[in-house]
Length: 275
Length: 304
Image (cartoon, rainbow over all chains, first blue to last red; front, side, top):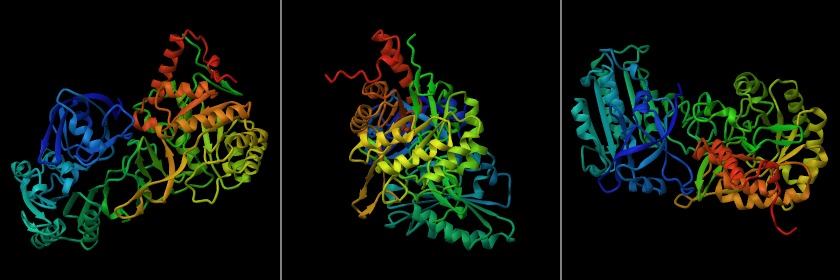
């Protein structure tokens, strides 16, 4: 059985969300069966040679026979995607890469799971939150932190609330939640959790899953160095050509040499990344 | 059924469509997506004697109808290649062409000798035209250096030698001749064009190593012209490449004199590009009632 599928698939929905964002739902029973949160797909935006390359997107949400992507209409590719209509087809290459390890946080009463999203980084984290809870994680043991420029750029609040997780918001301009960085919220939460549970250094009691801008992931990595009881996983991005590991274009530097974001990643243990 | 088989000197291929070095890894990454045994041949990512880490990120930038890359020949080295990559390729059942690179003629010869003693290698491609090594000039930019490297490799191996040429030259004919004189059985061209892109907001290069190589449909007309010039200059067979996206593009190169073609960047866009191109060439021959592809090679009607 092939692990990766390339197929023209039917678009079930392509809805605008606010002024610059879109949600696309694609019928893909075979892919949904194989894919897990944190993995990604490589989409062809049209059949022409301009723009040339495919565009990588994370799985935003899984349904029984379809999945959703959540994207910002920002460049040549996403502008074409936004024009697609219900019933159109799209060339999908998926599932790609290694996602989040769901087993790490579930079935462990003493563990706290924290999801940290910066801007569009919320996209894979909704699928992750839903996946973790489906896998047995108790919602009250999970904290979700959403950060963005302003209230207009905060998404999926109701979706997370419905899951029953604790939710905190940070915005740069203070238009919603904490005024400042989402990593400041994270620091505050870590202090709280640490006080509550008795931690020994050899037991990692907190798992952080993060997705967002490089600066945010880097800040979390630095934070992590001071907290030896915290495991920290982040979904990384890099310019990408093939998406399947062949071209070595999406390499990032780790303590163990260059790794491919598309193959060994996109989820990495953040302490291994050389920022 | 039209006959798609071609002979490039001693190298016999069931069809003229190869996958270009650096765009297909060592085959394994594409096994779920491409019927590998249908390919004319697989050219590996370039290997060097010792392992190479490659260039800093970002290594890829998309440009108009093309892309820049500056991977920097990241590879596991000869030993790593033979142990970890070659076993899979041997099992495919198509000719495996191993691309090699080095700084000096003696090292090319050493690698070629080692590959000659390795089972499962159909031919060697000399990558003397990689634009991403931070060197002042390329071997492929100097006819005497080309001759020296090819000659030294020729002495070290009986395997067919393909010399991969750079388009970044003033006279491709002279370089092609030097490769032929040195004993190259085949030449392949073009490698990528020196190129760069800049982020004007930060006024920094978009590639981690400042410059890279341009590939994709943007370079196809230039690459085609280069192949035509080389075809006029030498008698040895040519593998043409540069922005080939479909069967029509491929046939343009064949009409201009390429005995075979390689698909590179197109694979990133559609993994099945190479196999679709094989089918497309076959339909073209059937439509035109041409029984044998060899009749199309170099058949350009340019009045000369």
